[in-house]
Image 1: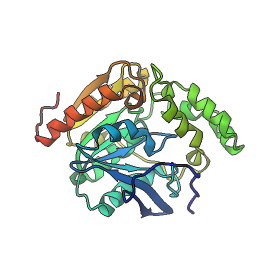
Image 2: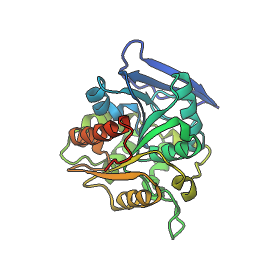
Image 3: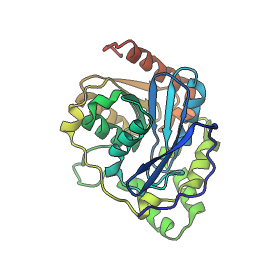
Image 4: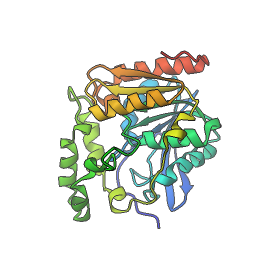
Amino acid sequence: MAVMAHDISIPSRPGQAWQVPVPSGMLAGETVGRGLPLLFLHGWTLDRRAWTPQVDALRDQVQSILIDRRGCGQSTASPSLGDEPDDLVAVLEQRSIDEAVIVAMSQGVRIALAFAARHPGRVRALVLQGPPLLFPTASGIAPDAAAVSGLHALARESRWTALGDALRRDPLFFLPGGEGEELRDLMLNAYRARDLLSAGRPLHLSSDEVASIRAPTLLICGEHEAGDRKRSAEQLAALLPDAARRGIPGGGHLCNLCSPVSYNAALMSFIGHVRDNSRHIC
C-alpha cells in the first residue's frame, strides 16, 4: 500500500521534474543539465536536495538525475530497500538512459552496489561516499542498529521536532565548519521516518556480489568521517577490482555539503577519467 509523502517544498525547474511509477507508488525526481548522466542517490533521512551543491556547480558539465528514494521527500512509494535496485532500472528506462554513473552516499551505497552487481551493463562508474558497514559484524549486530536506536518511539508518537533534534546530534549529521547546515536542517525537519514505521523488504548484498563489480569506482570519505565508515571504504577498496579512494579535507560524513568545492573537484576529476575511458583512476 502506498504511503502519502510528507508535504515538503522542493524547488524544481519547469519541465525538468518527473515521476516514475514503481510498485506501491511513485518516485519523484528531476533532471538538470545535459551530457554524461549521473544518477544521484541520497542517504538515510535525506532527500534529493542533499545534492544541491553538486547540481548547482556541475549543471553545465553533466546531466544530473535526482530522485527522492522510497519513503523520502516527495516520493509516495512505500519504503523497501530490497526494491530499490529495481527502482533504478525503472528510472533509467523512463528517462531513456542506457547507462549512468551512480553517485551514492551513506545508505544509498547499498543500493548502488546491489544495482551494479545485478545490472552491470547499466553502470558506467560508481562514486560511493561514506559507505556503511555492509556485512554482519562479529557480534551479529546489524551495522545500522545504533543509528536508529531510540528513534522509533519518537516516530510512533509523531514527535517530529524531537526526532529532528536527535538526528542533528548524531555524528553522521555533523558539518565541520557549519557550511550546509541550513540545507541539512530543512531535510531533517521534513523527515517523517516512514522507513522506521514500515521498513519493507531488506536488501541482501554479499561480498561475492560486490567483488563481481567491474565498474571503475571512487570511494570518498571526509577527513572527519567516523572510523567504521573509513573501515568500510577500506573493505570495499579491497573487494572491488577497480577502485580508488579519496579523502575530502575538513569534511565530515556529509562532505558533499560541508566541503562542496573539494568534493566537486574530486568528483569531476574522476568523471574526466571515466569520459576518457581510462582504467587508471588514482
